[in-house]
Length: 302
Image 1 (cartoon, one colour):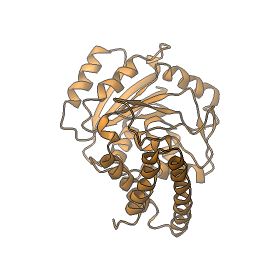
Image 2: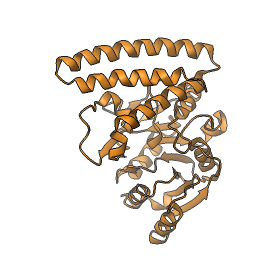
Image 3: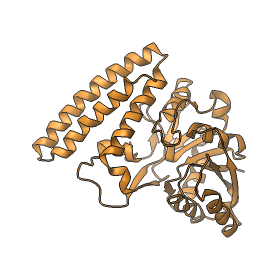
């Protein structure tokens, strides 16, 4: 088995069929090269039935359905690593879907660059249910899943790393650097994160490199509720809390984070002024609110 696609899911019956269908629509006739792992993290909806029905309708795809009772995305991802048989493990989100050519380009990457790079990722584009809100700016796109750090394929700089909807690992990395930190990452409806950043910092510090392949395209679904100010506020605070957990016992990391936040405040203020001059105040104000909410999360006692 060359590739293990892993989808960790929690009560996403609305979106999961879209993610699964994209697996079945892959071009290039590479179905014999991959398996699909679905890790159910205590879903109470129709997730088991959805996966079972998909497996029956697509017998040519090797589907592995398993459960993880410890609540949390990191626990679920670690479960996927445990059961995966593939040499390469690809983490996908349950509310995102692959471009039809994804597997074809992934096999090409493995054949041409897999001996040099043991981790990779690609762009994540947004698919809005409705028209993007008036405050939306690509500077906050990452809160909705957007990720496109470069125009062309190239090695990731250490300022960037693959994101959760589109992460590719050679399984040897987990053997060398350990699994995802269960203290970090989503837990049911708690909007935590930073588990991916924590993982790639370990990988980068050991001298390993990651590759950005612009042809490995993923689309992230953005339902209307994710564009509300209340949702953005909760997610922003979750970003801050996650970073607090990640760096709380690392003095140097705390100092670097303080300097980083100061710099980001300056940039956010300048961008706010820019949007004000363009008579787009909502776009500017949301940037300052975002920075405040992250700061609030960073200073929260955990």
